[in-house]
Each structure stands twice: as structure tokens, then as C-alpha cells.
Length: 269
Image (cartoon, rainbow, N blue to C red; front, side, top):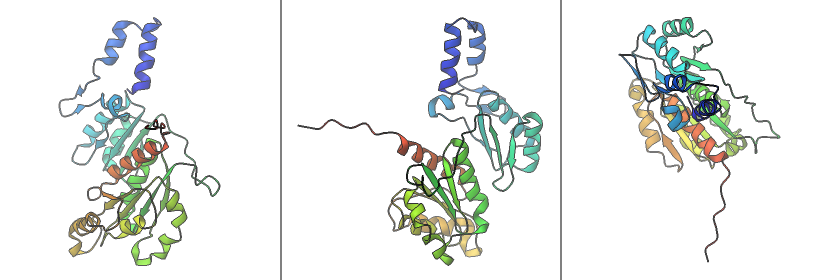
């Protein structure tokens, strides 16, 4: 339940169309719902505007399905990350309108989709959007997790795949696009230099996502993480290894905040 649905319920009670007891029943589990193995934070959407996301890895398929079913009963938009095919199948059995995206391994329930059109050359400067770029094709599962998260939350995304530093001209030719973005999510493994390059081409924040892609000395993404943390380019913030969801969430918040008109401050005498 988000703020809009809560206002709607209270209006219905005020108008006499919903009984007080029925309203109490709907609100009873607002703080959280205890399933025994999970306590679902139904109040989070009221606090933050978005419901709790489900990290599916480590949970059984039945647990994933039950959690998403209970969340989707109260929220029109639910995301499950790191989901296996078995967890997706169990979820779809309970929630038929759930969709499984195999590349990022995400389960998405979206009953209030936002119509998002990709920016064109004519609207590029006025249509808020986020660029998600990947160093290589092997980084796509994490990059697509970031892109899909951003889109489901309601922000346009432009995808730039396989534009890593091994062929830096592939990224540089998109410098105008990068310059118009509200935020850039740069996803890379190996040495992880892509975010620094992106930050040198654009004035917006760059969210760096190290991936676990690479040979032995990459240490499962630690080398890329350290490169990004030590970036000499200003404006780079770093999330954890393979955390595409976290990067997409932050990118959406940045784009949303940038789209809010600023109130003029009174001049000081």
C-alpha cells in the first residue's frame, strides 16, 4: 500500500463506502506481515514510495513464491532479484501475471506500468533518462538488472552494451547522449575502468557497478571494485560487486530528484 492507495482507502471510509472494520482488516498488517520465515515490510512503500524488494537467492522456490504473492496482494509493483527458474515457475503458479526475465534473473510484478518512451534526438535534452552501459557482453546480466530496475521504478533507460575501454571509441561516440543523461550506471568487470571514462565525458553522477567477470587476478570482482573506489574522476559513486539492483534504484532516485522543480530561494538583503 502506497500513499495514494492509503488516501483512497481513507476517502472511501469517510464517504461511507468502506466499513471501518474492513479498513482495519486492510491496515492490520501495514507495519509487517509475519510468515514465520519472513516478515514482510508492507509499511516501506508508505515511507519510501517503493515496496520491499525480494532477494531470492538462498530462499526456496516456495518461499520466494509465497513472499511475492503476499507482497503483490498489497502492492502493484514487486521486484524479485537473483531468482532461479524454479523460483520463477513457483511464483508464476501463484501470481500468473508475474514475469520472469532470464538474463538478469528477475521476477517482476507490475500492475501499474509506467509508459516509457526512449528519448529521441528531438527530445533528448528534455526527456529525463538514465544511461546504463556495460563494459562487455559478459557484464550484461548485472547491467540488465540495473536497467530493468530503473525502468520498473519509472525512469527511462538507454542501454549501451559492450562499450568498454578495450575499444573506448565505442563509448566516446555517444558523448552527447551521456551529457544529457540524469545519471549513468557503468557496469564493468576485469579492471573496471569504464566508470572513470564515463565520468570524464558527462556532468551527471556516475554509479559504478563492479562485476565478478574476469580472470583469476580479478578476484571475483575485487579488482574492479578497488579500481572504481579509487577513481580519480569526480562524481563516481560505487555499489557492491554485481549489485545491479542497487545501482538501478539509486539511478532512479537521482533522476526523480532531478526532475522535481526547484523552489526559488528568497534573496538575502
